[in-house]
Image (cartoon, rainbow over all chains, first blue to last red; front, side, top):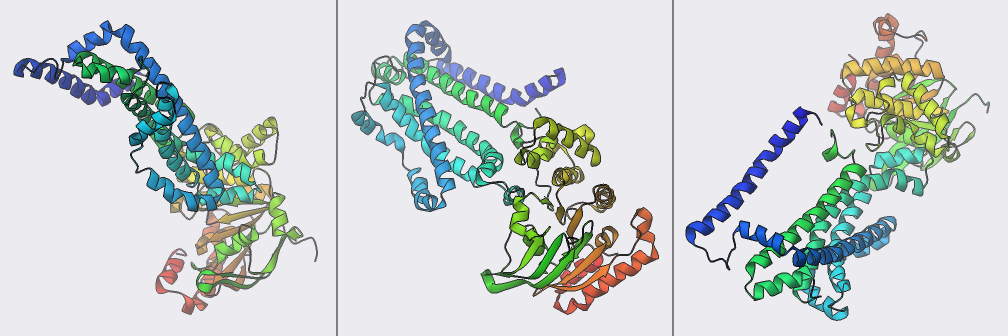
Length: 261
Length: 271
């Protein structure tokens, strides 16, 4: 990256950074100015301190929950891709199932968390992975399917003129066309996976899970630790999202939004 | 039938079930090797439909198309066609050279053989410096040249072009006309070229097939007896103007079938 490009990058990000810093400063200032009780809303600086001092407790808990989210993300997204492929390949299945799938995506899946806990062992990571997985499944299914169906008719016609079979057309046209759609879905799913895992744990889970920790700290009015736990959850969610974005930049470098870099 | 016919179109009729539209009725046409035949006519005359039937991309309702003595389906499976559409139809996820290599990959050519041919084709369409560019980094004219290179890379018996320069500006179009002619003369391919520009059809072709709409029929065929070697000056040749007029009159004779704006569009491109 040239110095000029780095400068442009900074100018691009500067407003967002300014808003973030200003927000934290206002928060810190408001607590001092209005004498807000510590247990209602801790200072950002205190949250930061707790994030560090309770690291032996919070970070392993975060890692535990992150693994659940990651597992659910991988399983749910993979199933979404597999189902999208089947539906795209066999149109009749699609006409029967897609309206149901789209209607199902309006269901607040998280409401099922207590039921998953009963079906699967609530103390095992499996029940949380299931929630995260179900949350990831539908957006990935719907978006990937849309991608697989978006292949340009002209490109397919061209491939047919070269006597290409269905497999070749999938490999060289449908799948590459669907990739940007898939990554859009994976970005959404990465965020949902972390939400699913943490919220799933609010309904009960292993003692060393982040969601359980946040909930119990809030119940004993230890808001500083609860907030520090939320910070851990946010950072982990962001890193999963960031990982997907990095992968996207490598895999679909040619997509309009990744061009020029 | 002698083997001197590349394409034989016999009694081809195409009816689109929706609205029962007769797109083509009783089309008969034969092409000899090395010919450059343009199909011209207003929208709805079935010229693109005819091109697609020749290329076995759609099936005729009745009649037959024979390419190199075999049915169109067989010819397609034997990789006898190179096709160029109005849009370049390039794959954004592939570089220029990998776009040109697509048909070669499908034919199972080795990597070295592909690389060598792609280089030759890039040379031919004067894009040697752009091998590793992506399509979106090229101008419309350059994209269309990539598309032509791809269509010709495997030396198909027949080059089918569906208004390939229709989306380009006049300057680019005239330059690409000249380039296409020089490529055609070097490779000796047989070309079927769909256009709605009279001047383009006359300038490029050895024969111009004028079509009329509703139902799509051949209104007349004009032999273009201009010198084989054509250049910018050809467009100023009196014979060129005579032929343009001849094509225009054939179109006009059928004018009663045209909507006014269709006729206006057709005649304007001849000026």
